[in-house]
Amino acid sequence: MKQLVTLSFAIKNTKEERNKIIKYMNYYFSIPIQETYNLLNIAYVAKLGYFRGIDFELDFPDKYTEEDMFKKLKTVFSDVSFTCQINNKNFEHDISIESENKKVKPTNRNTTNTSVTIEEALKEEFVIIHKKDLIELQKSKHVLKDLLGTIENLNNKLKQICDDIRTISES
Image 1 (cartoon, rainbow, N blue to C red):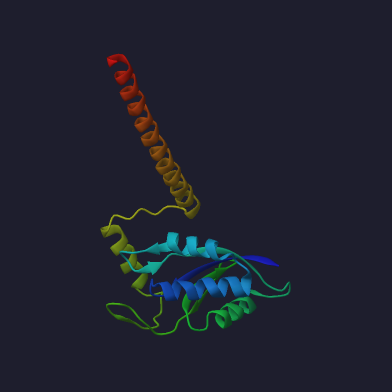
Image 2: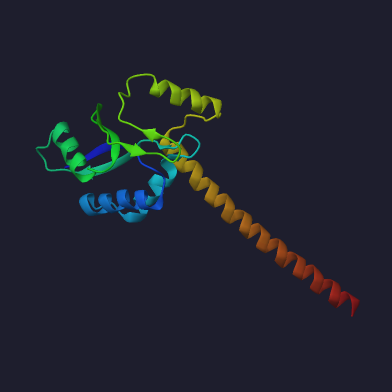
């Protein structure tokens, strides 16, 4: 049974850590490597140093409850801290990890940590945007880059044609 699960990973943004998540998602849930890689790149907030929630459609046995699904995720990501939401139920799996500039210990996230993160985001002038809209914006960005490349190519060809016309008219 396919189940929509939102996962937020508390890992360092290193190639090794990302590859670990990518490998687990591919091995245990048959999520394509490139898809997970792209989702992790989109979800990382560099200035705040964390990954936003990522929606995955994961396959579980039919009679699994939310708790069973979380136990499976804990088994799959035994060495990774994460939070997840399954059918509006929130779960948390914390292990101690060492960040680049400080140690992060398991905490009760219902305290002020969330509000501090929101305050930091507001100070950095982040805008809250729905993930679907963000993906559409990124697609548009790539299309615009391609269009800019096409315009530059056409400008170069136009200059070449102008130079050819000038050469022909001079002779």
